[in-house]
Image (cartoon, rainbow, N blue to C red; front, side, top):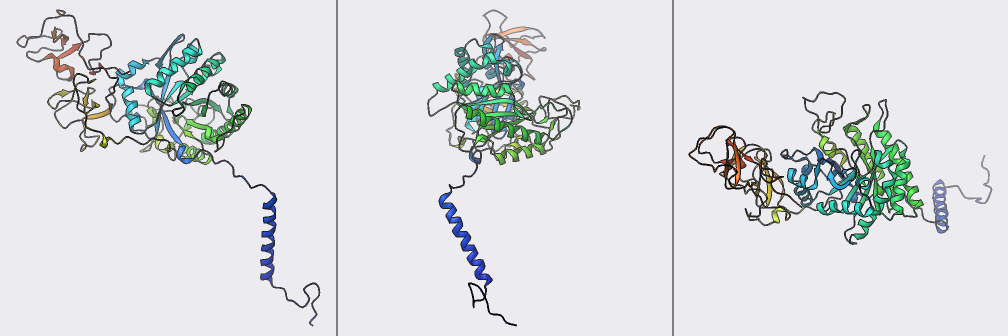
Length: 522
């Protein structure tokens, strides 16, 4: 039975396609109306721009061994390096030192630190200096006034030519509130003295727990801001949480970083300061301790490094670091697992991987362009001004001896004589007897042999038979016989420590004849 249609659309059949079309049109009109009266939706901050994210591993300068410079970890690691730690010479001595083990001059003479820093700069690897650390006396604690503190900091910054510093404030130093004002005013003074086109970036490295920064850490940051310090960022030490039972370090670190982000938002708000365009994570970094941590139950693996890097990238953290470049390899077979953390290996099996490669993935955006060495003119070396002897194809060289060739300093990896020049581009690194350290510096002092007062010992005579322990002089330099010889010139021992029957006698204090290291930078 057919019934007549009723209603508004009497006599018309319903088209579901038309219904759908009209419904969509209606929704579009509603949306347009809402857009006309509602503000546009703002997207959340995306963190640090990818091309500004950077990685730099910490490098413990106090572990440097001078002659062990072949395949230099500092120069070949990806990204940049944070050189650690500059501290006071003593509890009341405001002189900057490397971990109280070396003065700045010692570091230049013993293992060419100034030269290696300049090499990194020329090759496009950012370098920053870290002051403080968990042990020894912080400069802000030892120095009596903010002016003295600023002078101490400034001498280090000027010497190494850095534009970024790291203040590692932890343990007893973090609890020493009496030093906070001196440090803050000193840093503010240094920043104010810099030209506008060359600012000093200051990072605060602070310990965190699963719930973020400590009360001391929050208060210290707030004090820095009140003093007018332009804080570039806060680097969270995602390590050594003190958890006794094995736990997922990445999950704990993620929780700690999110909590730190919330705390920093509040600190910046309380200081009436705007956050960067990318949000609070533009002010944040993270530094895990690779491999075995100081807490036996905490072990940071390569898989943990991959997970933490992914988290940091997702949040848009500005910086990733690690402790430390010195530890970034598997321990050797002669180092039995004792549960004791080594300063020179990670304590976990890394295979062919490095933590630096993993953590720097996506964090190499801040490296500056390297200076192309191919475009640099060949430098004619001058023996009168060279910090080390000029390389000679006929001389004998022992392992650890340094030479200059074409404006660069090299160190012998093994005993050698003749062969190709140190800068031969056709030789693979493993095949060359020489390892590149860095360029000759304008501040280098000319190489000189130690001199003794005339007549201190008899003059060497080619016809005389000398026995072990005999001492002679040649051209003002003293030598002692290691075994009997006749006709063997003592000055060969300057470069050949292995087969020469003589060894130089030190003259002027501080001269390192054994390494042919009488130069000093700075």
